[in-house]
Length: 374
Ligand SMILES: C[S@@+](CC[C@H](N)C(=O)[O-])C[C@H]1O[C@@H](n2cnc3c(N)ncnc32)[C@H](O)[C@@H]1O
Image 1 (spheres, rainbow, N blue to C red):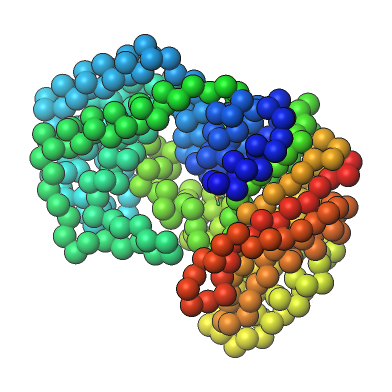
Image 2 (spheres, rainbow, N blue to C red):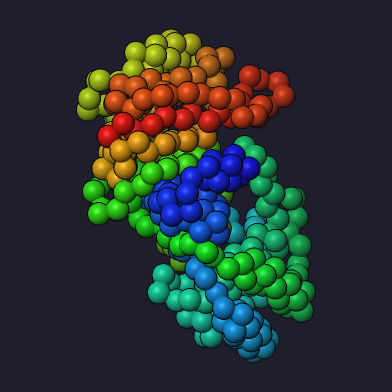
């Protein structure tokens, strides 16, 4: 975040900024707050929706209106508590919420739908749904750690009064964050970063934090929100979506790797060495993990080869990435990405360590920068 701010600050306030891997749209929002015009890409419909809700400008009156409407929805909750409200088809849902809490959440969701309608891109009151997303996690038994997710052994029963009180408290915080006035503009659009089309718009700065080759799946953590918001309807969809995601590893995204092979073999030599070392390491599923790493960098190479479609000559790139380790074999992410950039005609590639990510292993975060000569 600090690095993103520093990089953006070196550019003029009218510079167009791109983040091809939006996530929660922090880069785009930071750029829009500073006055730039910013665009970001993602393939996850929930994140696209969330990013656009966050990047909208809200007047004080509009925020007050959302709050009033939310109170209206809250007022309806007691009469909406019943057994046949819609609940998300989340696997093992009883591990997330007690039956009683689930009933209250489902009633609150029904009340919000009555007042705000389902969360869709065309609505301007999405902040009410952002607060609901936070509420479902706040009331759940799940704990999100960096690499794993765990559940407490028991779910807690939250009474109606507690859930509605919590919702309004969260909504207050969400509305307060929405009151920051944007000097510039920010938008998130659905684009697969591996095949960026020409779009009549070019960017002089790309700042992004792409997925890392570390088998962390964004879908895994986002599933509860995506089911509650109806951006996911069945388990299979999550695997399909993660197959499109660079470094995706959820469900069928991993089993499909068995049949995967690159179309083009023109990839950096350092990648071939890395993949070979992992494949021959003797680790559990070593060939599959080697293919995982191969595909990650193959996809990043596709991304970097289509990126010039939207770059100004002289554009500057900053990729915040982490290295990883498979069976003791280091995957030197910054070096492999820099090699891809050089092969594709980018210049001035430099990689700098930003911070250490792990006390025991040599895992770091880097800023890999380059420029596009045009
Ligand atoms: C590390 S996260 C971005 C984190 C972000 N900087 C933030 O602050 O939230 C990577 C994002 O890349 C997205 N992504 C993965 N594969 C993609 C693809 N092929 N095209 C576009 N976005 C993709 C994922 O959905 C995820 O949101």
